[in-house]
Amino acid sequence: MIKKVLIIIVVLNLIGLINSCCETELNYKWIGVSSEIIDNSAVAPVISNSDSINKMAYGIRLHLKDSFLYYTHLPTFFNITYATSCDKKDVEIHTIKNIIIKTLYDFDDVKLKNADISNYFLARISTETTSNYSSILEIANRFNDKNSIDYKDDDSFDLFLMKQPSKIDTCRFQIEINLSDSSSISCTTRTIKLY
Image 1 (tube, rainbow, N blue to C red):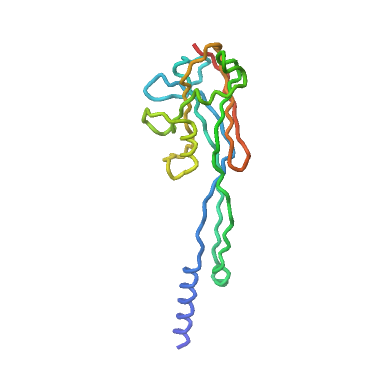
Image 2 (image 1 turned 90 degrees about the vertical axis):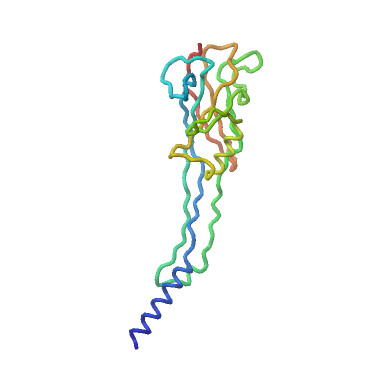
């Protein structure tokens, strides 16, 4: 009889434990960005380590670095009542608000050194093989919903220069990504000759 009572108590505690477990929340924050020069003259863009590139094929691959923030509240076996009050911790997902690309050399007669030339670029997720380009803001919005992209462990996208410079044969760009928490991450491309 005592054995049956103990089994019933254990089973009830296990049922209570299962019913009272809280879910794990996964959120993320963008914490860094780096860049590589890409050559878009072939079928698919490739990383270029060359000191020069055709100005019709110039591109930048941006690698975003994120930090995952987990919050899990799981009960202990002997303290089931504690788990029934799963206090949710608000962990804000930091989204990309905008991406600004500045030229570090005079680009043309209108866009001089330190001018915003973001509208001279189009973008595409690096893992996508389609040749369809999107606006930079459209790609940023897709990165804000991490479930909409097959990342293959690489949070990167490509920027393609769609307007060729008229004043320079050397280029270097600064990319600044402004986030929803008023912070920003940035990187600068290496200097390269355009021909």
